[in-house]
Amino acid sequence: MEKKLTRSVSNRMIAGVCGGLGEYLNIDPTIVRLLFALIFVFAGTGLLLYIILWIVIPEGVPGGPASNQTIEPPQQ
Image (cartoon, rainbow, N blue to C red; front, side):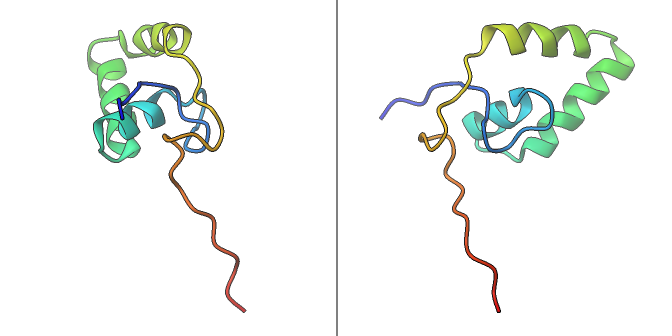
């Protein structure tokens, strides 16, 4: 099965760009978010890059292959 880069539906803070990149690269999305923050602070282009990726990357399908998180019922 071919991996596709999509914005995350289940792991999003704003638009799911960092969550989708994290799922695609098999790394923690928090690391991707930190990289975007560092690029924004030191280079000033992180926000522009994020907005461009938000427009270009399609949104993933709920329950699709990228949303591999399982929800377990709470323990009683």
